[in-house]
Image (cartoon, rainbow, N blue to C red):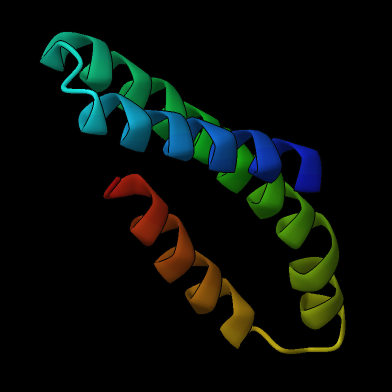
Length: 80
């Protein structure tokens, strides 16, 4: 996960450099799109892990409120 985030951080720095160099807008937008896809990928992996561990554990402990919390989290991710 940290490796992926480091790569995304590098992509962000690259986008900043492209803007500073007045790179053609379409090329910058393409890089932004790739960075967003990479962030979405990290979010999906985190969500899967969260569901398989934290959510399952809380349900097993009788905490059904975690389902509502999870639905809010999913809604936040879907807005993007």
